[in-house]
Image (tube, rainbow, N blue to C red):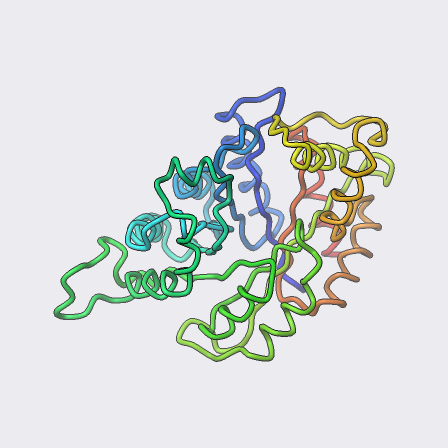
Amino acid sequence: MTTLSILELVRVTQDTDAGTALDNARDLASHAEKWGYGRVWVAEHHNMAGIASAATSIVIAHIAGGTKTIRVGAGGIMLPNHAPYIIAEQFGTLERLYPGRIDLGLGRAPGTDQIAVRAMRRSPEASDQFPQDVLELQAFLAPAGENQRIVAVPAAGTNVPLWILGSSNFGAALAAELGLPYAFASHFAPDMLLPALDLYRSRFKPSEQLDRPYAMAGINVIAADTDAEARRLATTQQMSFADLFSGRRDLSKPPIDDIETYWSPHEKAQAMRMLARSVIGSADTVRTGLQGFIAETGIDEVMIVSDVYDHQARLRSIALIAEAMKR
C-alpha cells in the first residue's frame, strides 16, 4: 500500500491561539501514529498570523516529543533563509534527540513576503545558491573528516535524510542529480506535477542516501461522514486561498454553508486552479479519488493536507482517510 503522510499546517484559528495550534499539531501526530501514517511534516512560513510553524525545528521537537515512532520533519526548511551550518546544527540535534525519526525537506522559496525577507537579513538572491547550500548542508551532516576545522556539533555523522521540495522542474532536476527523494507541492501548485515527476525519474542518479527514485506528492484531502459535510468543511481552506489572493492574512475561518457568497469570481478561479489536486467527500469518495491520484502519478508516498477548522473534525478527517485506504 502507498504510504500516507501528513503536512501539518499548524493553523491558528479564530477560536484558538498559537499555543493551542501547536498542541493540536502534537495531538494530531499522536493519533496519526496510531492510524498508520508514515510521517508528519511542518513547513516554514513567516509573517502569517494564521500559521504557527515559523520556528520549524522547535515545532518538530514539540511534535516528536509527543510521539514515539512516526517520522517528523520539515516540509520544508526554506534554505535561502538560513546558513546551512545552523540548519545542520538544529536538525542534527533533533536527530540526536529522536534518532531515526527526523526528515529534512528543503525548499528554495522564502516562504514569506519581501518585507520578512529583509527582516531576516537575507538577500533576495540567496535562492541562487540553493544547490550549493544543499551540498554544504549535506556535508555538515556527514561524518567529520580528520582535519576538518569547522564541524556542526552535534550534527556531524547523523546523516539526517534530505529531501528536495519543489513545484517546478528545477527541484525535480536537482533531486535527480543529487540522488535525493523528491516531494512535489501539488496541494497548491498542481500544474507541473506530472512533467516534474517524469523529469525526476528519468534523470535520477543513485546516491549513498537513495538507490532509486522516491517521489512524494501533496494533495488536499478532506473527509467526513458525507460528501456534503466534507464540502462544507472544505470552505475553510477555500476562504484561506481567497484571502491570500486578496492580500488578507487572516486567521483560519470556520466553514460556511455557501462559499459562493464569500469569494469573487476572480478569487474563485485562482483558488480552484491552485486547489485542483483535491479530494473531498466521504470515505468511499476519498478512496476512489486517492486511488486515481496514485494510479495517475505512480508516486511512492502521498502527503495529505487536511485543512479542517475544528480540531476534532480534523482528527475525524485524518482517521477516515486512513480507514478508506486500508479497505
